[in-house]
Length: 144
Image 1 (tube, rainbow, N blue to C red):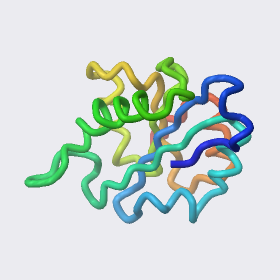
Image 2 (cartoon, rainbow, N blue to C red):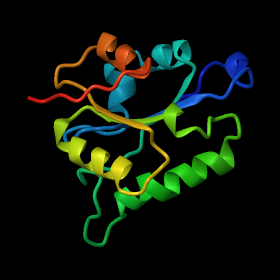
Image 3 (cartoon, rainbow, N blue to C red):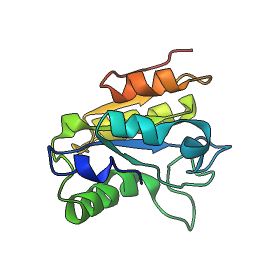
């Protein structure tokens, strides 16, 4: 998890961006490949980067149910643990670095999960500028 600088916490509720990694990556991908800490501070946004190995964020046999985790467990944990985070779904987004996760993100947002107000899929060759654009409040749904 990444939070804005300490001085920003408490001034206003902090937005949340949950970033899902791709199949050939892990949760550290976002820190290693981008300037996510700087962007999160500029956008006054908390960034959540869950680790899901090669699960495509779905339930695997004898493993964790990642859709349940993203729909129920993670939102409950965040709400109960960090009171300075916004409770407004429009301030919560979920995004991925791989198009293969787009369907699951759309399902999570549209199938009764009111926690995430927006979802996006970054282009395969995305840059920090794309990530900054996304975190500024614009959805990106790559079609090809």
